Length: 246
Image (cartoon, rainbow, N blue to C red; front, side):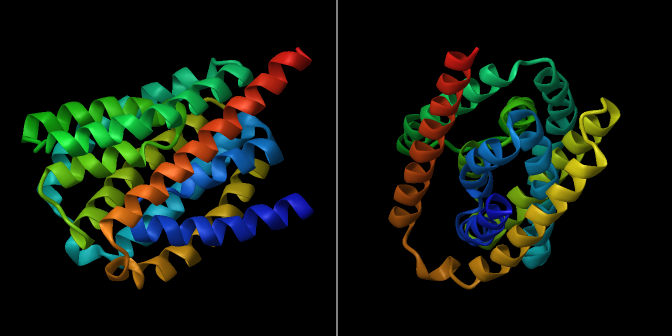
């Protein structure tokens, strides 16, 4: 019960962070879910919770959604996410932890590289990015640190960026959850856990909306890098422990 309580409290904090910077809830919670439920349950639980948090973020910024950008990105991303989720089911737990940890750590320089290049995405580049990130999301769950710069590169800012990224993520995670269900990887117990975690994220999301205009972009960047570093390191440590036990 202590583990559940800690995860739920962390969910409110993670939802607030996600509501401010457009990403981060999965990065914060995934290591906690791995330690509490194990890697095979953690990903489906977080996928259900991600549907809920992105729904709340899309509702909070509904009028700001850029529908053309959303379509260009999400149409190829949805089937790619289903393929990625199917790939995830076949992987061993220790490999999942290792891949997640390395991916999070790699996103720190990768995100900064995109920022320095000042990349501006065209429609076909959005489609390619959507397919790639959709597939990666199917495997590693959290790609907000990649998708947020993609939507920023399309010229979206603040509310429009948060709303459009949330709507795209909602479609992707709904596809992922449906794929888990079809493959028998989403039990009733796991679904209920996802609903509990997702409800705390939704509460935090609406707190975060009020902070969007009060935090500098430089602060966003440093906060995101810190979360990536801590989460990536924690998952690699969990993988190392699992390998030693094996």
